[in-house]
Length: 247
Image (cartoon, rainbow, N blue to C red):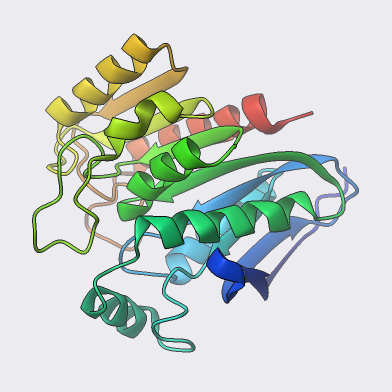
């Protein structure tokens, strides 16, 4: 099997037609294959997120990560861009949905695309992935420890205050959720409530909570990294996207 991949910085049309920097990792064989929009965590469009994007391409999907902070600080380091975005009040939900929608369309237009697109996000990106899957027509979503989905964000947070779960009836696709039992945002009670709401609405979902893991347990460059939880999480992510994006 020909398994070559290519990764590069590209420009996509984001919310309102704005030119937005993005990182594309794609397979070089003919396909057809599904695509995944990667939503970076609050620290920004960084090397770790680009590595996640490349890993998804190796797993067999085209993957595209838009730089949500591009407008605030084009060309800045991830830390400086994240600080600029926080100072500007954070990324609005409407702009986020517009950027993810633009990324999804860019993936659908790739040669070899099968037209199916999923979304995955970590930390604040987990919340944003859930939101995008409620407001856009997508085929699969993975929420990795997205905080403030069920509970409201505090007034001083750059995350919009409205809990995303209020839109759960609009969820357009199956959801996989991966959480840590030692996390606070979201805590286990929030995760349990999310599962209850999704089940009550008849939404296809699988939620997994890992004992001994807290927030950011996928982050290989942080003390929070939990290799056993991350390895099992990656197996579930690949299987989820294979199930819902193949064909």
